[in-house]
Image (cartoon, rainbow over all chains, first blue to last red; front, side):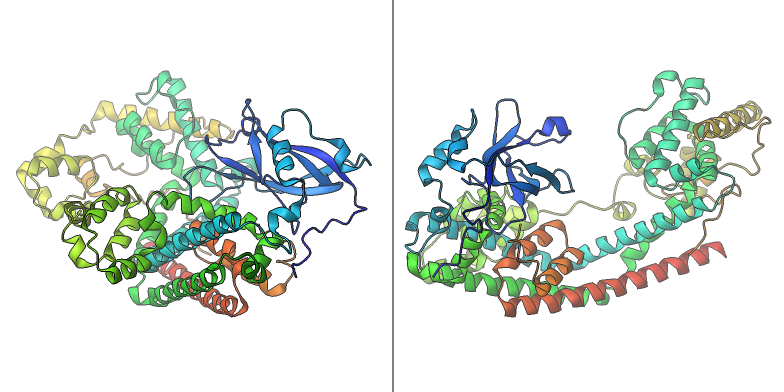
Length: 537
Length: 78
């Protein structure tokens, strides 16, 4: 006995309405080939008929015209880009709209021009929701089977992902922890900014977010470019979107020897250098959390994988028999009848990503069982399959390959080269690697690898390090003082604070001498006196 | 995404919010949310226990991480 499918009782008013989604007008980038769904809070889709998705018009707008129950309706658009793992919502909040009731019977309102897809669908299914979701007489085996297959593919893909994740769970947890620590530091930083009484409220608001601080520094930099000081030209101005690291690189390159001034003075306003040091510390702390603390997490990830496998087995057995009555009586049918196929649409997308080769659809365990039992030699199939699998993102393919029997991996040359691929060297290893001195010198000069202390005393190294274009002299000291004033004034203009009349003398030696610069490569936590100490919560 | 009466059952609502709260990445979160309507009671109970333990464990890790960070900052200051 099927559960009641349509919640709409006969007397409820319906009206024809068109939902439009214009990505260009909303400033959202929807890739070609995406599917856009309409989602709302009803047990079954309340619209008749239900193509399920919005059709794309010539102008790039997506629209859906159907009949809806009259009254206010809360809805959302879900976009499913092609080849993606899932879907995303263009705008977080729910949208609402009022469906104006025309008071006319639904069949007489008709569909507006241009919705031929909707009208053909309506013809095909006779405008009856029941025939989509199944009725007491059951649906043709074909549709059900396709739905079941889509479900199985989705489950298999999810299961595979859970299995890989169970292996790399500790890395994932470290990343989450690191992000949390960064957020904690940002919060404390914001707190310290808010406690500064010498700023206006507007300044405090700007400088308490990372984006605001970046904007402040970009504004200061652009002011200096306009004023053409510190060796900058008007054309060096930076515009457009950037990240903190890209701005850092550009500014360092453009300012050259004036970078330390810029950094120190800006930091006296926004605490940037200390924040950078603390963020570096957070990265270290996240790295040094002991492995033993992650064991529980790994165990639970494995539990989740086993749970999903169990679910998969249960659902497969329930939907195995595509005979209409059996399927209809089961939980799957109930789920579909309650509108669950909308959820299934989102599982088809990840399945389609992995599709293209039948081996992948079965899931790794089934594959092994099937081929070993049949005793056939799938050497050639492996070669072919490996070419397909090489297109998958690295971890997925490697995970699958690990489950293949030894005798086949040894046969395939492609597989062997894939499995033996070395990981890229990290920079910590560069110092210890047997690189020619010329290459290491380049890396040291770029500041990417810290120079070992003893190397500074080697005459050749001293000479190399002295090549850096930093030579403080008398003329330079005057230029430095002028630069400092310019930067201070630029900062105060950017923050709309009154300018300082007399130039601020630099209170301590700047880290521009070759030896100290060599020590301060990477993240220099400069402890300049002018920056305010952030409050430790 | 769910049938509307799915979230009116308190256990389902709790499970849904725990999945969203848990330290998983987007793909895994979406996958579990999609599977929630398909799960039976026993599976839901297992998942609930798993999520609660995971969240508690991660909160403990966070606490440890923040304490360590504080310690290092104090060291730097002194």
